[in-house]
Length: 299
Length: 211
View (cartoon, rainbow over the protein chains, first blue to last red):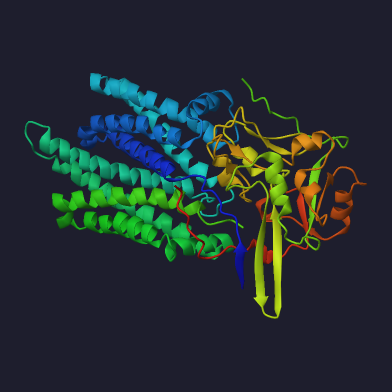
């Protein structure tokens, strides 16, 4: 119909550093969940994963805010102002407090776990669960409350983020446990039972994750013009390699098939491959969501 | 410490409520407003506080060139003010949406939330910047620079609370429209004769990867 003779080039507001930040908080929340399964909820099968889970959660959550600080224009001022000038209607304002409290709680929880104090470990583990959910859920809210972008502005966004966090966290835990058991223990025997249970959980979480993506896209494709445009951009446009191939095929569908076929699940080669593919796919998901969600001009 | 811009909602009729009407029947697409804005506000190269989107449509001989001057809409319910984590985006009592450089940390969340994409990162300051209706000029009793410079008087600025002002008369007697009313932001920049083709987005938008 028309051609654009003169157009203004828009700046991209949130870029790749924010994707890495979301990825790290997701991995952290996921591994924290695994570590609380035995101490908080009494699934003793997962006890060998607990200590590794809490160490990974703390380290990743110390790494994650560094990406944020690299992205903002004024890093030191931003730390100060976030705590001093609190805006109760901004999701990002709560994030600063969560990013502060959650690692502190995780460290206390970890110290009690390493000392063998079961009662206190359980208390701090149970406090940590809603915090882990919040610290990753709020990142979804940040995007969902940016009303201008139809790809983000959906109530599913925090839930999608939580499920992708758990999925990638479990994949990371599978890899870490295999490496630890194989190379850093005296027996050099991998805890097969634990890995098998984690792989089964991974499979079912991937089913839910794929279902959520389907719900999201089916609504986008029937929604208003901007939403249809962004869905087409993801499915058939310039982002389709990242979204269809990397995120969903390599990151979710193939790992799901691998962990649901018992023969493949019990082979460590296939399981490690599935976990690696899933971790790469979730990283692609963060890039697709953050960058792809806001790259189309709005008007 | 509480937020210094925690404002009491302005409802008093004695206070002005600044607004703008852009008459596109008069606009000739000369881009003078862009340049006047850049000169007045010292806007760096590559970014704009106000710009004119220009499209050509139709097939020869039935063709038209449509324009859409764009600036901050100084919404009554601004999305940027709600999401700002440090309260740096704030609204004056006369409705002008401002950025406080002492509070802004450059997190760019407001840029993602603004449905009109009028906010930008100032390359030298590392903070968010945008149109502020030339608030220093307005406070001194002058009109914003773009209004003053427009050769066709297509931009009309004034007090929407005053029923005798030009903007109030135009808003109440002409068929005016605002940009993206479905966003619920309630803009205070009105357009007369806006061609909706200038609001179209393209399916295959040019991807510019950030450096």
